Amino acid sequence: MITLIKGIAIALLIMLMILTPFSVISVLAEPLVEPFNLTATQPQFCNQLTLEDWQRIITPEKNLTLESGFQFLPDTTDTIIFIDGSDQRSNITYCAALLQEKSANSLQTLGIIKANIDDSGKTKLLLSSSKIDGFWWDTKKLMVVSLPINSQTKTLNLDSPGIVSSRYFRISSFWGSLILAIVTVLVFYEMIVRLVALQKGSISRDPVVLTAGAYGKASLSQLQIFCFTLLVLGKLVYGLLLGGILGGLSTDILLLLGISAVGSVGSKGLYLTNKRLSFENWTWLRNEQWLTAFEQGLTNLAEEWNQLSPKQARWGDLLRNNQETSTLDVYSLQLAGFSLLVAFSLLITPLNTLEIYNLPDSFLGVLGLSNVVYLGGKVVTPNSFSELDEHMNKLRENEKTWLLNITDKLVKKLENNAEFQITFKNASQEERFWQLMLLSPHEYTDYLLKARLAGTMLRTLYGQTGTFGGDTMEDSELIPTSIKALISQINQIAIE
Image 1 (cartoon, rainbow, N blue to C red):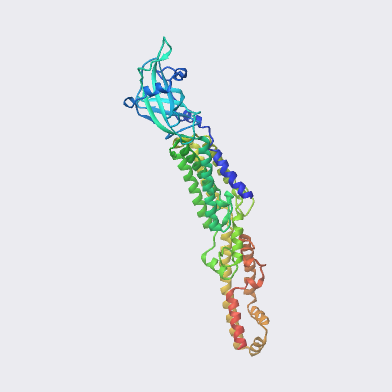
Image 2 (image 1 turned 30 degrees about the vertical axis):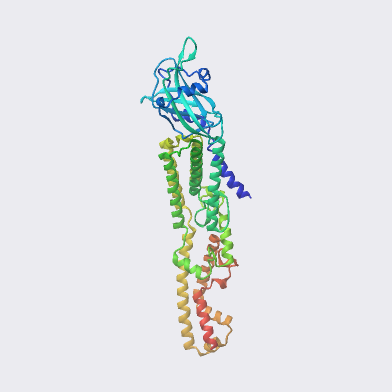
């Protein structure tokens, strides 16, 4: 239940990042300059226009192209529109209204906050559409007109319109878009949970567990990618539902994800390089039944290990210098700090500016350096697997020496000592075992000491569950299969 709450809380927190007030979009995206020949819009005149007036003004033959950065009209934001034409007369005002033709011809007048003519001769208008009436996906007709003001009668001259433009839009809902965006991210999150569960055999909604690296260890770089992906996905889905367009991503956002990806691939490569045994040693440990971890579908013990392994990923491991110790890794802390700062920067970024979003070059460089040093920190961490691998090479070499020595001495003893032949043949299996050990006491002791140390190192890295079948490590289990096979053959010959 706690992990479920954690997963949902993380997803909701990320979705809260998209709640940046959408009304600041038009201000931050491209500030409007003061018009050089347009009077301030006067809504009191526009409110005088009736439905019949609009129908008389808006005619197909006069209709100019109306463009917008949105395919939908959001019901909670101000919207910039462009009209392919201009009205450069003095003492005019702009009027805008929404008409829902299928609902008793309801008419709603919209305010115009700013207006100007750009260098290409197009008219740019900032509509105040933050209180649009109607329901989500309602189709309405947006109508825009410029009309001169009669200074004497203080009325609009409807007979000489300048700009006349109209276009049909669907109305989008802020709350509807937000809820669907949250649901989309949660569904995506749950899909990841299920896919990971198919591989690991157990369900966990903890993002640290979901993004765990090799051997189920917590991975800061993969968690970074995961969070940035959910954040950007949520904002893009929200923008698509609210404005009807799929926003682009700036080079810096792609670069941020690229840096994260490099960090993830690099750290994974370093992890697999540093924290693995040679194939020969790994095979020997598996054949000797020393290493019993990760045997999916073979034993109940393996299933128990696979269920326990995801629990190794913990939040505290993200900032550790080595997950086998409790030392704070300042490089991981630096990377996490800058990543949170970037996430906050994306939090306050308007939706339609993701395509032009950029970070200062110096900051981007610091973040990139953090990841490089983070990888460097991975390289210089204590490498217990390398030490175990080196120790296993010595142990296997000692096994060969012991086997050759004991075989050679046994053959000579049996050929040259008749009394030993009788004693050896009549001895019990346990007595016969110790007679063989005493033939080469130095090699036996040397091997046993190395084997005890190797077993302790192996259990430290893989835990009791993953080594020696989960049982207590006994000296009898440390005797190699080659020696056991030799003893078995000798016992068989002695019986015959």
